[in-house]
Length: 182
Image (tube, rainbow, N blue to C red; front, side, top):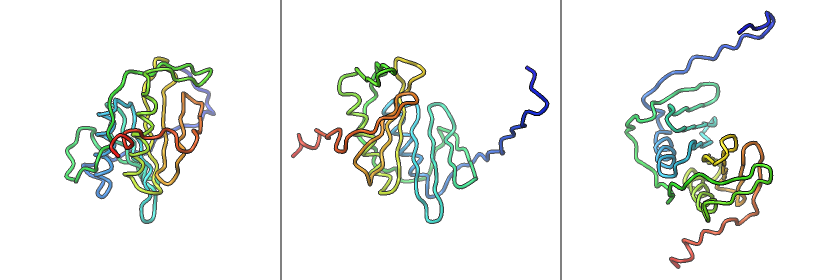
């Protein structure tokens, strides 16, 4: 493949492979377990630190990537971490969603979108008030994955289908599991 002589040369900064990210190890464990239980292809957290923000990105069959400021480190996905695990939201692995990217319609599995939305909201609440959780799942349309983003301090969720984003009404979905217990 030929590139023009004036094409900018992109050179990625080296990434360190580490065995721990210290105080963020429990968050890594939480996201990794959420990813495995839910069948997500990606689980991400944005966590406020004392003097910075950390982005923890856990992808299926990929190293865990942690970015703090300009520093990026990787942890092997299956690495045993010496940290206390955080409570993982109740979440099941569901079949891929049937979607219509043109209309933004998600048609199956029945109740699946609500199930994942409740779980991502709970994930954000576990992460803490100003932190953000995002999870992404496969759909039957390969170029249109479904993502759900939640912030514990906000009631509204943002759903994305491929590149299209949809802000959901505050209060959606209602967690009916709580209603059955009370």
